[in-house]
Image (cartoon, rainbow over all chains, first blue to last red; front, side):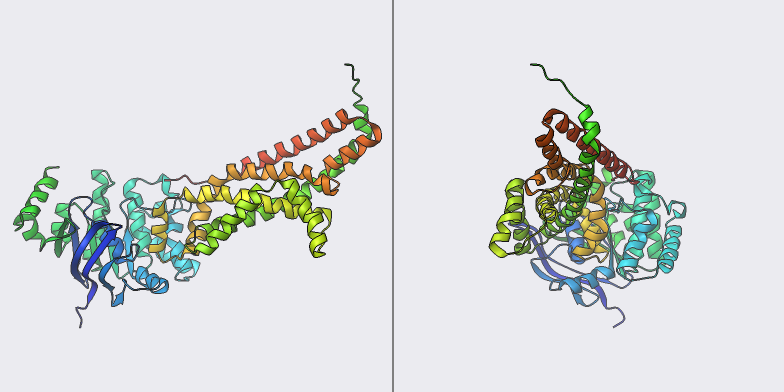
Length: 249
Length: 222
């Protein structure tokens, strides 16, 4: 069982009151795999990501992360699941009241109970790997959008997750800043073989990095394919329409 | 209408009047301290999902924000001792009444500050493994601290001004002494003007100090 699924999503349904956001969604992500979720805005991709680490509760179906059932996890078990999943948000969600390095070390110090020295050394290594070691002691408001997102990635990585979830990590960024963030993510794939689920509209990036692309629309999976087939030769009419739309923009 | 001011009377009685400031300071700072703790506690349990804790907080606020302070003070100092036999010194009663009232006001100030923090901050904290309490302690309360300060300063100033009411239970603070002297020397205008000046000086100094604390904020919201 070397290829055990890191994430297993089975027949998941999610509602907000009467509004069905996701219906009967199923997929698996294996160790080292990169899954890209695409779809028109409001189709529930981001909700799906937040369901995987238990920030949102699902109404039906099952979600397993490394064999742990997220759908029926207690508070304590949910914390364990969250420690295995790093999540990066579209709007960064950095902690504005502490410096960059403190953003990274806060959780390792408080949750993993690392020593200050250990946490700070690891944080400096992470800041170097995302290319902003000189920003260690500044507050987040002084950083550019790209730097903020790279800091957010470093903060998530500091918890040594086995899975990274990216929720439109570059949507709030200017074009030149997108690239610096995508490079960091690309390196996570190339160098660390990180298992990742990304919600993104970056077609070129998805083509290069993804193992699989899933298109979600109208609450369900429209098409699943390898990136080359998905972007160059999609089967479904809705996928074609969606691709025409994002490629024109 | 001719009234001849005799400010000289303040020269004679001023030091005695000013010594009442000590009680004003003790009562107001103690009650500011306890109001802060009570307020923070109430605001915190209001963020919990537990309905009983939430209700406790809401009922507390409804009671202690609405009872007139004078009424509360008399209840604590006189009525409570008749009913239960527990009796407090005037200063103790004053601190208890002002803290109970100030706690309700401070809670509302904190609640405003905490509710202004976007939910995405909670999401980020939860996803890093923080519990609800941990999130409050490390992320939301430190962020709310500075945005709450202006509202909190108002609560604290109210606490200070409310110390004047404690003369009713004979706390020998400035207002009590002003009345005491007036009865002896019949110079109410001079004595109460003197008392007012003392309060003004104290509160101006206090609010200036709070503004200095506000300036300590090194970060900006993003």
